[in-house]
Image (cartoon, rainbow, N blue to C red; front, side, top):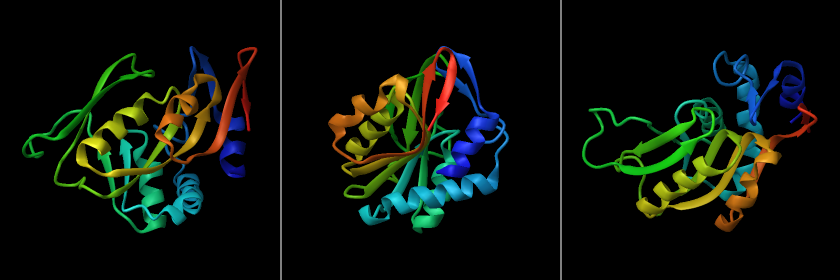
Amino acid sequence: MKDLVRRLRADSRYLGNGIIKVDGFINHQVDSALMYKCGFELSKLFDRYKPDIILTAETSGILSALTTSLALSCPMIYARKKKPITMAGDPYVAKTLSHTKGEEVTFNISREFLKSKQRVLIIDDFLARGLTMLALNDIIQQAGAQLIGIGVLVEKNYEGGRELLSSLRVPIKSLAKIDINNNQLVIK
C-alpha cells in the first residue's frame, strides 16, 4: 500500500535488534486516516474469505483490526494481556514471548466472545517471528474455531515469521514489507 510505504520511509527508524520505531503513526500516536485506509486495504485482501470475526492482540494490533472489522462489517475481539475481573469463568489462554517487551506474555480471550466454528481472521500491526500469531491460533483451536487468514500492516522479512506460519496453511497478506541492509531499512 503506497501511503503506508511512503509513511514508513519518511517516519520509521531502525533501532537495532530487529526493532522498528513507528510510534509516531501506528502504535503510540496514531495517524487515524492512514489506519482507516490500511483497514480498508486489508478488508479487500480478505473479503472473499468471509470472516465472522477479527482477532488481534492487545495493544498495537487493535487499531488495524478495528478499521478492518469496520470495512468487513464484522466484530473484532482482542486478546487481553491480563484477565480483568469482568472476564467471567476460565478464558482461553495462550502464552508467547514478546520481542519488543523482552518477556513472556499471556493472552486471555473470553469464551463468551470466541465461539466454535467461527471463521477467524487475525489482523496485527507487525509480522515478525510469528509467535504472537501462533499463540492466537492456539486460542482459535481451543475454541474450535477456524483460522482463515492473517493480515498485517508491516512484515519484517528478516524475522522469518512467514516461514514459521506456513504450516498453518492460510493466506498471509501484508501491506508493506521491510528488510534490513547494513543497518538501514529497506521498505517495499
